[in-house]
Length: 155
Image 1 (spheres, rainbow, N blue to C red):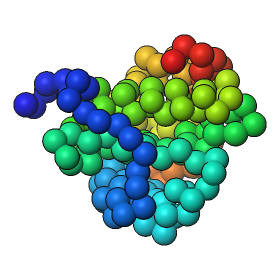
Image 2: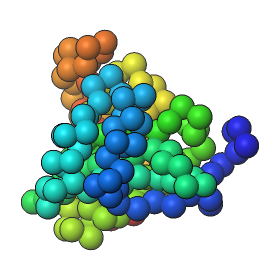
Image 3: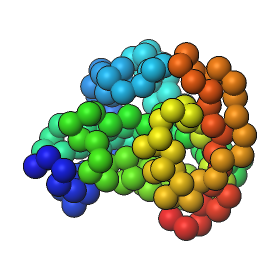
């Protein structure tokens, strides 16, 4: 199964409160500054928040979230377990996230990504995000690249 695309075999849906432990585990395994279980629990309760998970064969394989409001979507986090990377899961999660943000009236999307996370930057560029700025020392190990998608209507 390694290297095989999983996008046809995954289910993407909203994270349930009882799944916060699994989501936090994925974030911790993937992100330099992961959200805690308590932060994710609060995020799920926020009416502006959208927090999705991708499941493969019943296992949570990846998560992503955003705040959607006032016509804008701020993507907060995207994480995929190492064994599921490079199989289209992050792309599928972001596509669904942007579709839901669009349904809520968002027309633009924003995110920050570590300058040394080349795979993520390439993914965001593939989706249509463009670099618009930089935040020095935003992450422990790197500057952040600010990116925007000016027109969510492509999803």
